[in-house]
Length: 341
Ligand SMILES: Nc1ncnc2c1ncn2[C@@H]1O[C@H](COP(=O)(O)OP(=O)(O)OP(=O)(O)O)[C@@H](O)[C@H]1O
Ligand SMILES: [Mg+2]
Image (cartoon, rainbow, N blue to C red; front, side, top):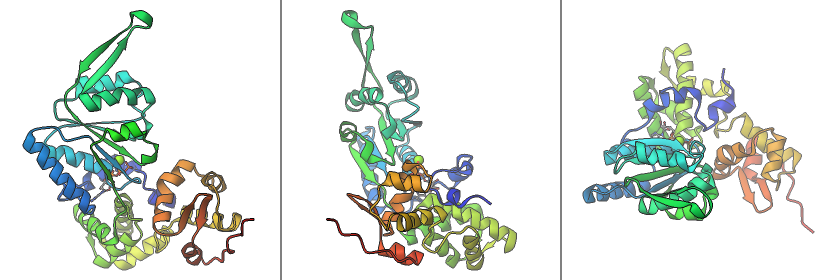
């Protein structure tokens, strides 16, 4: 059985890179569930750009992992009727990589999707500024007094950037996006709708109550919801003639050690460490990372946003603190915060 950390992590897993995630990915804005305001706005921007026969303005999507940034980028291309080229911050390691992409791979109006855009290095980012503003790429040739700058016109395209860490984006880069959206966690009803659609695509029969049970444990994250659905489907296939019932779902969740709030072992280890080793906090995120032997980035990008949003953890200027809700959920008594002298 896979480790729980793998099940609940919102990071893409292997099977998702081999087609399953693609199969479940909505391909139009109408199929995209939730995020109503974002959808309404995007529809207007798309229609306006299409009517004017112009490329869509540059877009930036930011959110914790698994909430639909990549999905939306592909939907944008489809709705605009253009091609999309996909790359990422770490892949574009020097300005020349960007130049090659812009001049050989893109046509007028196409979308260039840069995932993890917060990881662009400074020289590529600087080369991007005039590209985003004026569709001009400047190339420096030679060095010293004899050096010249060549100006290269690139097709008018749309840059779509995605990041889980908008805080790491520089001001000048962020300011060059005309459209900026923050995707929030999904509500349980929205996740249930996503699960209904996914179950249909997977050809599984599922009780409504079963999908609701999964939705409640999906951390407001479509990727996690779909992954849990596939794991529950395994249990259903083996133990319940393929029908996803509430009973088989409940049994699967117990087997996977996912509690009714959607917390897994790692979440519980983190909350327990703060309670037991640090008196409930406040404690710095680096210290927590060491205490549970996890990468600090994983804690801040993947795990903490949900724990904070669902009221188990509080971020304070002096560090992270356990909330009374977390103490109650774990059946712990936390001492009252120590007075500061
Ligand atoms: N609004 C939605 N409606 C239906 N399914 C969705 C929605 N958003 C995401 N999904 C599903 O969740 C999966 C993960 O979404 P996606 O890959 O777009 O997330 P992401 O924000 O790009 O994550 P990461 O930060 O890890 O790149 C998709 O394959 C899709 O099946
Ligand atoms: Mg993505």
